Amino acid sequence: MYLVSNRTRRRLSEVVVAIFVVYLAWIIQLALLSQFRFVDICANLPMAMTIVWGLTFGSRMEKATNDELRVSSLSAVFIRQLLSGSPSGLLIGAYFAALAASVMPVYPVCYPLIGWIAGYFSLRNFNQAAFLCIPLTVLLNFLAEMIMALQLNLVGRPDVFSHMMQISFPEAFLSGIIAPVLFIPMRGWFQYSLYLDR
Image (cartoon, rainbow, N blue to C red):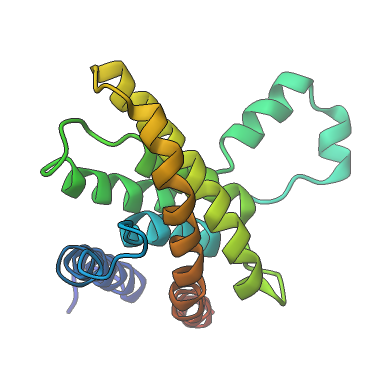
């Protein structure tokens, strides 16, 4: 006799797999991708994975109907929009940020924030989603670099914004290149988990 249901065991196994994937991505970033540089810049696999995770899994909140939007106040619509980010993207981003805080002088708030924001652009129902994830990853990675530069500037690091322009564009471009490689298996994993929920 089991103490937990099959669905709970399946969710726990998905969490264990997600933790394993995060650690694997972190090790790949530190051991492999840091060796392959393009114009002295390497791809940011943890940020790309956080973005793609948010794009893939998105928000579980149901889309508001036109009637609900008509009768709701502007503040209610605004709050609903704020809450429709990706909780799993936020958690994966927070996990990567905790790992990155061990090698950085500050906790990189951009990881969970960008994971949440990526949920606004959920690509679950698009045919050409593997191609759409490229520009979204580039834009969100650039936004994350701006947030990180602002955070480092507030801490007192000199010349952050001048170096940001030299680093952020190539890094966002490299992360955009690896985004479809991450998106296709992650979307398959999402569709498989939906199939198991039936």
